[in-house]
Image (cartoon, rainbow, N blue to C red; front, side, top):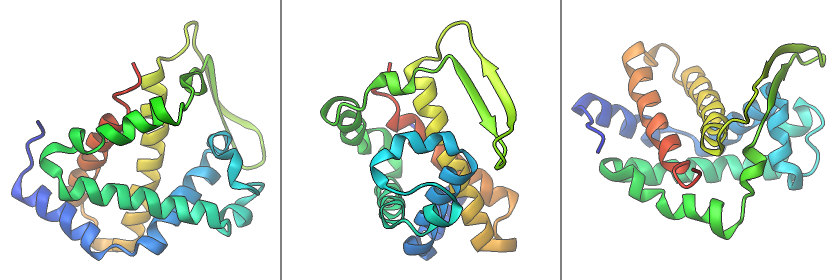
Length: 181
């Protein structure tokens, strides 16, 4: 079980209490799809994701971004047992929706600049585990969410606030990926 300080608990509740879900959710998911364009392969049914403007104006991206934040609200309301809160969603993705774990099997991971040039390429002799890739993808989204929240909060997003927020997101990511093993 995760131990939360009073400061961490109050900080997380405050951030989500003041958050504009219609703004932050779509902005975070859009940022993830733009900055990490290879993640778009998991959203093939979302339509046009051909450039930043298309992604930012895509209603399916906006709707899913809001859905992600609503899921995080469930975690905020159940901070003492986030793992149990996301058991059903974790099972849904791995078993019922049959999100193929092979989607998460990667032998090579490359990052590209917006011009299509390779920025970084990682080649692994053995494929990453399903859980590590699931965790990696969700962590990218969590990082993008952190950037968007920091931009919206400005100077109020201190190092202590960031620490509490990222601790919360790390617990959520871990809880969501536990079905992949």
